Length: 250
Image (cartoon, rainbow, N blue to C red; front, side):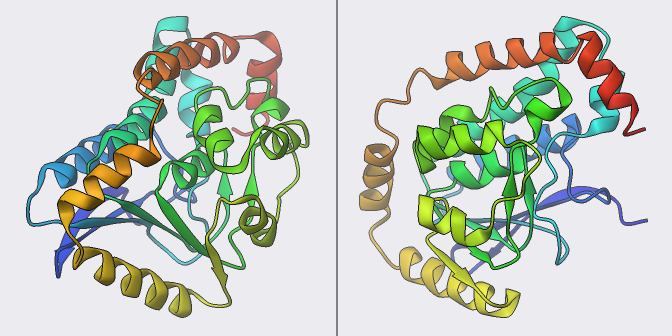
């Protein structure tokens, strides 16, 4: 079995951050922690001008929270700690002084949609459908909601949240503003991502950093907001409804 990892590769002043997990690139706590740390390190690395966020494999981009870890949560404190993992990653992406390009090769669920929404510019293949399944298992997309709503608007976010068992197409995601462009193949996606990253790496890094600050204006309170949202999810995951529902995924 392929082991999980988070790795940073630097090529021509572009920092490629790749994460992987054998279970459809799901996100257990250790991967979330490593990802937040790696994003922060890349943001502070002066040899990196722009960042590309990607996942391993050629199918699912990110399946969201690790269900095995969700099932194991037994108290509100550990629940808040787990969901704070997503909060920390989104906040590191938000505060990173480098522009982050999202490379989405396949489906995203829950927290995976949050990661895509927290990038500054996102491109995908036609297979990169998205789903917010949280309500169907008894919780809700509380932590990622600010990032998703900021990108696609409250009506689209509400539609996806309520229609929790439906995958919305990559074209839907493009129409709503999550994806800047959608490509037929992974090869075309990679060419477009690398072309854009190369262009951005040639621009004035000070201008890029100041422009990113403008993009994320009025989100300074997210450090507190997302932690508060993690507390809500951490409590809901202990409910009888959620515990019963999660048992089906053992």
